[in-house]
Length: 207
Ligand code: GAR
Image 1: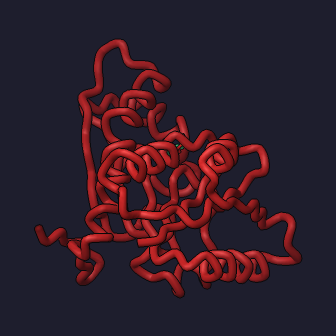
Image 2: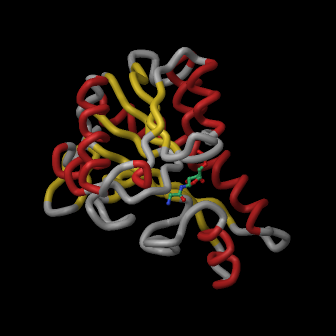
């Protein structure tokens, strides 16, 4: 299966996918496109280092959001990707890409949805909010993407304990390492194997 990976920053989740295509559970998966919302994303270097085609598309560079949305659709179509993976992608997708790739876009979120999600909850912020609320577990969620932030069907979740000495940065790192880098590749595997069904906004995994 061919996939496109959308990024905005460091790209450690992209790296986890790349590593799995080489020696892990995704050896039959091809990353045909990395699409970044920022020209400065280190994820672009990771793509280049691994010979993966990349493109930068910023909505601010287009006459309006509809034109940008159209260009995103064109890039994904031209790449031949069957699945779009949002791996630390921080822009809200346009309605055209969301409808044309309905149930074929997934996102990794660094909290246990429906906690600490929605507009403005990205990067370090969910971890700050989790510690401020005093939760005893947190984690990550892979979900399908619809037109609202973090509201599509939940596919996979993994939790970790919150520890007494955690700072947002420490918690963020533990969740990336123990949750995100594991469940995002796993979600791609399940979809590639045709093991995921969606009914009435609920995702079911058929083993
Ligand atoms: C990850 O923690 C990801 O879960 C989060 O941004 C980080 C990107 O890291 N995504 C969101 O907050 C989306 N709402 P990375 O660029 O190193 O993969």
